Length: 425
Image 1: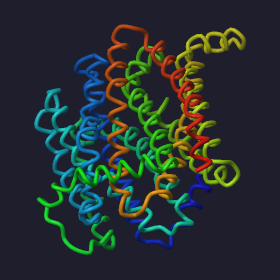
Image 2: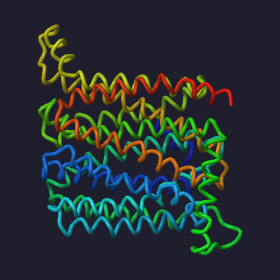
Image 3: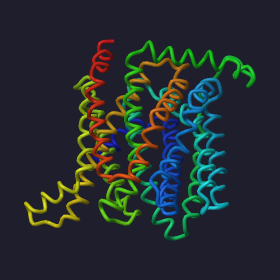
């Protein structure tokens, strides 16, 4: 499996500029996830409340809702290389502000909001840069590498945060993250100019035309079924990921009875393995099956796995009775196996959807389309994330997880007509 992923990388290896962008992605996302895991656990330990964890998750999701679409417009207007460099430099400085008071939840929320606001400009510029650096025939491979790396950085960042914090406290992962953002900025500085404009546009003039450009981006989404379909599916998947992040601390502690920092071994690493497998599987499946069939099948599988996670206790108990096994060990085993398949399914949905967006969007519009993606993801995330945290504080976490799985299965069925329409377009 790893060999197949490396084969995708070797396919792109002659393109040195893509490798620089990929390095920037890997470093910046690993840094972000390392900080995120450290603070996610810290907020839960400081407050003992899933609702406060929800607020923390929203503190880095809300900026996308507020600024995502506008940031996409400016990602199309400004030099994308400059955007990538400046945003990484700013994030390197901002994360160091966490060190002013790691025991203050308001400080953690405020700095996270600031870091996420800067990230809104980085994300659409990075997404729009991929097809500018990669030949059309290698777009699927490039997106597979990027999506798999995104979740690999999730595994590495979450996996390293605990051991690094044990060495130097929670401040050390933050310092390491600041260094990673700095190196990512250097990698972006070595990229060629991206999306050179015919003339310079003053910041004041750019603001005046933001509304017009937002309408143009929305028109592309409205008039292009494949782009709309891709955006809808990525929004659904990211909503599930946001809710799972809120539920994870309570799930690991209450259902599995494990130390919170064991989440890397039990859940995060299996999800990462599944993501790697999904990237390789999608690269092959897309040649044999329609996109809508791949996405629908993956969504149904993902929903089933989330529902199984919610029913892990009775499943493990039944299996223990049948095999005379240890129920606790079986709960961990079922959780890890389900997480692996869940990672594979999510990866396939995201790679297929992002490739559709790249293929169906004109170069000059990609930044604002990805800006709308960030905005729609976080608009869809806000209520479920808050609701999930509140529900876990009053109801069993397994009930909430089961309901999430059922809702995802329902979405897979409901979105079938949209998939058919996109396939005919």
